[in-house]
Image (cartoon, rainbow, N blue to C red; front, top):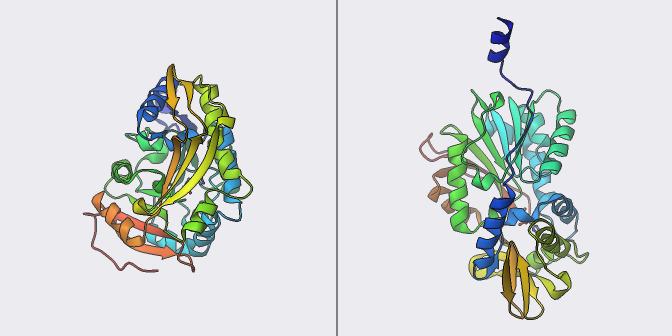
Length: 338
Ligand code: AVI
C-alpha cells in the first residue's frame, strides 16, 4: 500500500535534467557546418564552461550595452510584464547565468521556473543560486540544445499550468531568419496553444557602435570566438592553431546583421571531427551572426511563425524591445505600444 502511494506522488525532487547533445551529434553538426560555404558552426558550440564565462564578461564591457539595457528594462517594467504575462510556469530558453529573470520572478511569482541552457555546469550553478535567492519558486534546470528540443521532458512542475516562455538577450538574432522562424514555431509547440512568449530583440543601430560592441577594445569578444577553436581541438580532435586566424566582426547592412568570424591568415589544412578541411588565405569560419530587427521586421517574422505581438516595451534610447507574443489564433488583438 505504501509503495503504491509513493508511486503516485509526483517526483518533484528531480531538479536537473541533462539532455546535452552526445559527442556523435556534435561531430555530425560540426561536419555539416564545416561543409557550408562560408563555413559556419552552430552558435551554441561557443558555450562550453569557458565560453559561458567569457560571454558574461562581454556583458560587462562598455561597448556591449545589450545586457545592461535589457536588465534595466526588465527591472523597471517587471510589474507590468508580470501583469501582462499572467499566471503559469515561466520557461526561460538559453537561461545562461539566469540573473535577468530575478525581477520577473519577484513580480510574477510563477508556479515554477524552468531554465533551459546548453552549458551544464553553468546551468546547475545558476539554478542553485536562483533557488537560494527565490525559495518560494520551485526551480528546474534542463541542459539541452533548446533549438532542437522536440518536446519538454515529462516533469510534474511542467504540468497543469499555462507555460510562459521567456527568451531575453536577443538570442533569436543568432539564428538565420529561416531558422529563427522555425525556432519560434517550435516554441509555440513547446509552450502549447495557451502559451505566451516574452522575447527581447535588439534593434539595428549605427554600424560603428555595433562593430565595437562585437569587437571590444579589451578583446573579450575575440577571446570568446577563439575559445571555440580550443573547444573544437579538445572535444572533436581538432588541430586549429589559433595564431593562424584573426577575429573580425562586420556589420552587413544587406542582412541587418553582425557577422563574427575567425579569418584564416594563410592557406592551411585543419583536422577536425575525423576529416581534413582546407582553408584558403582570408577564408572565414563564421562563429556567429547577430541579426538585428526593427520592431516592425520582428513583428513580421513572428507573424510568419504564428505569433502575434500584443505589447511591446522599449528602453528610453529605443535600442531594444521586449515583445509579448501570443499565438495568432488565441485571443483578440490589443494595442501595441510602449
Ligand atoms: C547571445 N547573443 C545574443 C549574443 C549577441 O549579442 O548576439 C552573443 C554574442 N556574441 C558576441 N557577443 C555577443
